[in-house]
Image 1 (spheres, rainbow, N blue to C red):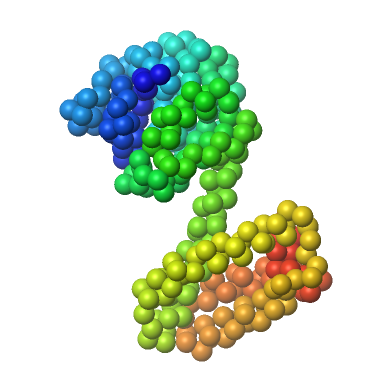
Image 2: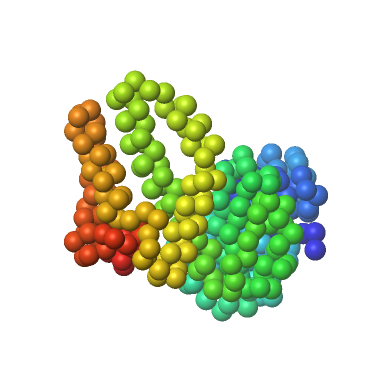
Length: 287
């Protein structure tokens, strides 16, 4: 199979189509505003006059629009639903785990093989080895779309037939990322308050990232196995650090929203009697 259709030509969708063209695929494209297809047509893409034409042109259709709601609006017509029967639909729009389940049920009603995907990359990273696309859903859909997806990203893990797995994993990654953002931005204020360079600290974090990864791996194993005794880093020990962050914020007169948030969670854990357990036991008060 060398034919693929791309529906939605925004920043990411347009890049997906362009990368697939560069990798030698025959790409049919459709977008509500056809002007966005013009550069791709110059690269060799085929512009479909309608959504049904795009779906009918290829055994695999990739849709990448702003949301699942937009996706439904585009695909949920009688002629398009009929065209989807027996074909593969790869959903690369942004959605929640429940939306992934609902979308799969809808696709199955049309007789389509459905794969849910979550892109962990910027448009400029697409087609490179460090780009990742989490996938889950129909194994048949994954097997048929795998060559296309691996042209788009060097890392394309298939997380199984539980269709919500890709979305949940993506949200879990984003939760970790945004938590890291908050910690780093507070770290930047600590450094600024003492006249130190934020960019030098950023370089240091980049260099020690593998060590941080090992810490997170260890805590994940602690949580998965519920083995919180014999801690390497207890909640009591970590609370000392939280109190230092609070004290430094008071002394330097900087925003303390981040340590206040952390303190409230750690205090709940200590009040529950988890102080001598591994820091991963904090998850008990988050359940």
